[in-house]
Length: 355
Image (cartoon, rainbow, N blue to C red; front, side):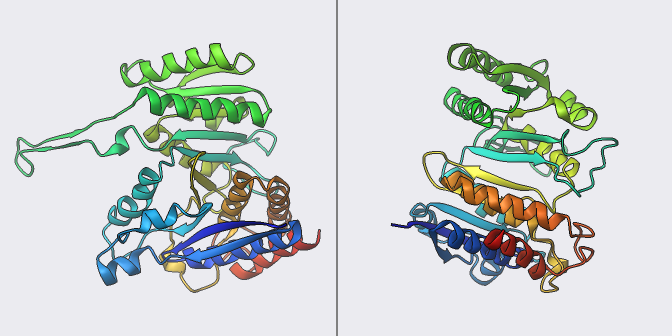
């Protein structure tokens, strides 16, 4: 009997619905080819709904989303909504409420994609960042004293728990073992300055590694050195594990060295619950409705979703379709691909269905 996966779809804002449509086209082709079913339910969470109702997530939305096997997200961000409202009210709210404590970001340079790094190619840029996704500075702990006066004080606290740190590290060790590339896990931190938070991270990293993962080589790098080496020697990295804020920063750098936001995808993972997958780029509202936006990052997010659901063969075929399509594009930039948004989706879907 064919397996059925219940997928919540949040097309979102701007060009989000356009790239999601192409991602779903490819996912449907994979489902038909490999004999499973995707039961999709769409939710209109985003800027238009907020402007209409004043709600970011309506009452009961989180409980509704818990019923699904995965969430497929387009983009959040509306030019008529103040920055931060939708991001905190939808993206961060879902990450925290659904306990999606891992942000998983592959950094992989595909053939026929330009990187700004001189003399580096696909054989040099292929690593993964595992970012803790529910603690650190993004918890929102802190506040103001005497706000708006010359004596104003702003406090933002980084909260790191042993439980939160350890479960992130264990995920990273397991992922490194399953990836089976260089069997090397690098902790990215700042132990020389952030002496409390990263003392906890470093101690847990060594303790867990020594006791439970002796087959995995452990390395450490300060975050500033990590940024330098990602540019100078990206081939040094296999899997990087880090906290919420540092992970947020270095994954954007990773997107640039792998060719830009047009190819970068990520997953917000709860290994015991529902996970959410999305392209890294924003909603790009200036391109809305023009049919020129690049959908490959959204398609790659769908590929990550398939892999996480256990459909490894289908995920591999989607990745092959992405690589095949990249060989035909003139550019990854909107309006410069040489094909429309839907034509790019068609090429990937056709390759998945027939190759």
